Length: 313
Image (cartoon, rainbow, N blue to C red; front, side):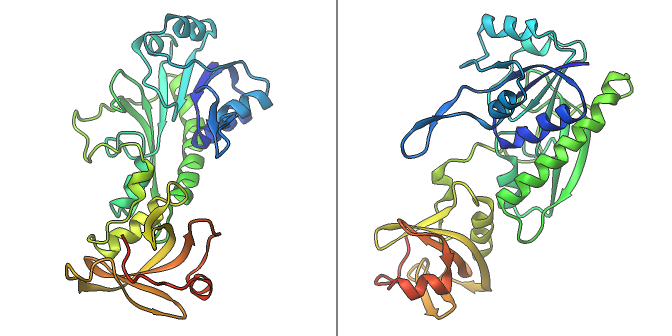
């Protein structure tokens, strides 16, 4: 079976490596163009592109694939029997979906129809779910609306971060993909249509502003934000006019309601850390990072930083 793989970030690397390890013939890898990255804005090769180069796989990096006849013909020329998509980052048009005889299959990091969209991992943690998973879906023209072929449930641990869940779901999705492809090839896969409406709001792409802490929310909500935004873009606030990132935190006195005057204020500090009043409950950061400094424990942070302003914004 000849496979074309379409994906871009680290999440997709797991599936591509699994296909290579299983011995499938990868006739093409399609990924986003290399982009400027870092403070110096140097051009950086994407994770999937790097794997394609390492294994000397045919690599194609179009700026866009919609309304792009050249992209359609290039992918058609790769003669795929099946196309695998994992976090590609662009909507795939019908002209490409129709190319492979077995169809196009997407590795999606949620239990569809929940959390359709670009950031299902972070949104599952933000919403306090105890379980999520991975779905292999036969793609159609909709956004994550195609028939469900297979799925695997994954628990969300109490200390789960966006990074740790990302890794777990990437590995789970890769394994599920390898189990699913033979069923598709042999014609014994089942295809379960999704309902028209998702069971959750759209899981929109995360940006830096999504990490800004709103202390009027409950301490439990903020603690989930801290975990969901770790490692990127991180949960952050400002202290003394500088950005303060909170990498890890826990909740105390969850039933203690804040007043408008107390919300966002450091109500106490001791050798172990800061105690911040939220809309409901006390948030206690365990690991922090002041702008221009390294990440450190709350105790270490307080030994080296004098807090002049007791309010956070």
